[in-house]
Length: 199
Image 1 (cartoon, rainbow, N blue to C red):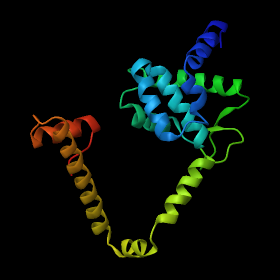
Image 2: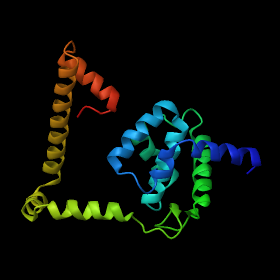
Image 3: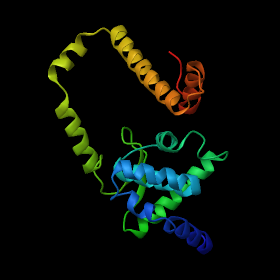
Image 4: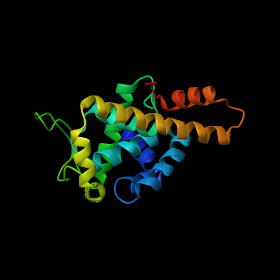
């Protein structure tokens, strides 16, 4: 990497205290709020912040997987028209930042473990493991037994019902905030904004 490009990468990464904290320190809810604020000022720094946290917390995510997750956080199209080129530059910047912290971002091509990973990290961040363990502990074994007896069609129907319920709540909240919206307008706005599909 040329000296000037290295300096530019360092400046971009160093310009935000969020980035330094993103990969280890900040709780996820607070981090997401900070990320949205950063995205409104500098989308490139926001993408790199998201990528850094993602590769730190979870191993073996491919370009496609990372792109989808970053877009889930920042919105579809956040990589711009040259998405492959921007992704490559972003990964290079994240790799450089990690190297400054004594870490190595590598890419595995082995079957079953294909994707980016930080050398020496566990497959899943310890905090995520604790969150998952806590969520699993809250699951009622009777609910699982009932769910397992459902046919695939019944499971699909339950999923559809849950989506429709979430849509209704979102539409009601939109109408409270924007009383001039009709129900149909609120549904259209919600689906366009969140790119939800009608079932």
